[in-house]
Image 1 (tube, helix red, strand yellow):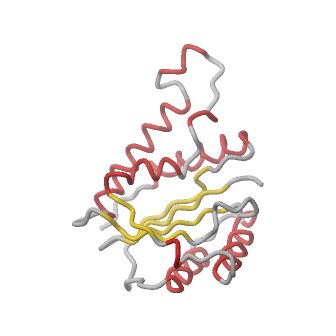
Image 2 (cartoon, rainbow, N blue to C red; image 1 turned 90 degrees about the vertical axis):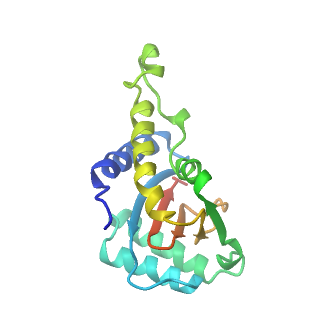
Length: 184
């Protein structure tokens, strides 16, 4: 059974969107899903198909859905980008750091109150605590009996013309989809 991560995830996504749009440029977390797939995904083309089916069922806002699907289609058939060559292993020990790296960096969370910089009233302090809770919930689901999972990077996120970074981590029993976005 997958725990309901919505109470933790929705405020994280709202904060990422708010501060990410204010920062106007750096990557921020746009979507995250964890699920138990009905059948194992074993190829890059199957992962692309899975992502397209997920967003067909639970779409993003229209402002992101069409550009995301266009980016996925472009990189799936690109001559200059190969998701197959960018399959890596995500380690349990580095999972939290990796996920935080998909989110907006601390430096973009500005506070007007200089005394709030190191307290829970700092927007990043509360956000960081929520991210830690999310990581603690997801990590045992993704890394049930293994120290690493297969990580598919489906878009060329090092390309200055690619606004989305799509990652799919496939563990023994659960799959994690992480979608980051940056304003070009």
